[in-house]
Image (cartoon, rainbow, N blue to C red; front, side, top):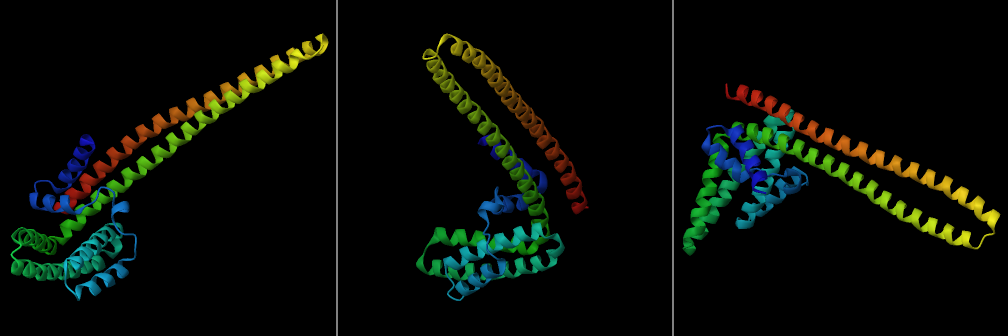
Length: 257
């Protein structure tokens, strides 16, 4: 687990470079699995719900705007041709969320909730940061999420391959057990046969055994081929990851020029 977390941290640090403020913000904002963490519902519907809750400004409204903002940033990274539209949406959401947080902070101050006030002040600083650095936020988020989605795709493909191999091995074991049971049934049947009939049955048993061995070897060979393919695909995943990293570094270098 620690090694995996270190890899995620290294990816974000690579993208942010020496920009500590950008790294600090995105480390708190981006998700390792955006598909699982970010709402699949339509952005416009989420905005409508957030704006409805905004009328009764409360902490729930702040949380709703967080979910909408996460969704907007993610969609901006996946739809570069609509980047301008999404940036306007993000700016508007950031402004409204900041306003909702200011109202919540005023309530907390009146109640003397010092720790809550301090937490809300940090949130307000974060919203201000987004407004000032929105292009950088979207650029880095795009590289991060695209890599994460590619890696998640690699993981799913590896999982599917392993499950297929395991299913083949399970089938092989079940068929082997079935063959043993059939052999035992034929052996018992031969005991009741006459000499000539038993002799023919034993010859047939030999032919059956040879066919079974051929099938077993064919199954084993297929499993070996699948395992070899799995090793080759795993190596291919590493090569694709390195190629993406090279391309990502070049793109990030151009963005910073």
